[in-house]
Image (tube, rainbow, N blue to C red):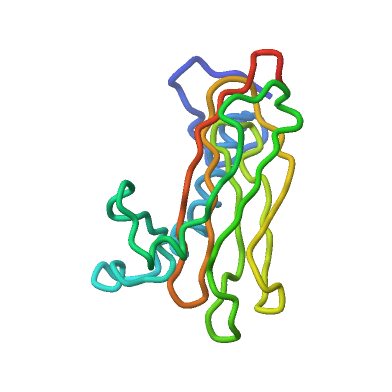
Length: 170
């Protein structure tokens, strides 16, 4: 594999002697983007404000309406965690679990961690309530854990919790 000076590219499309790891990675990202981006932006702008695919936040976090209170997941988690390998989290909701109106799943994410997705927990009306207890692996330093709850009628709702993992954590 030949190395080219920075900023200079090989003139041919894909000859084996000109392909670098960076070029393979760049072309792979372009290919993945071509597959994923149309799915993310499949709706028109006029439909976007009412789409159930959008993640919704409370309009005023200090004064949450009863409707928002049903749909926004409650997160119980320490503000400071000593051991990033075992960070406890409890997610609970008062949302009804009726056959025609229920929470379908809860996702836990942390964008500051090398492994962003922490889990997806699926529900049916037979569960009776939304309650999740789990242990998360968090990277050391400041982090924000996001919990997204999806209602089958009213879309996705998010809540977040800031946490500081001790330097001696993971």
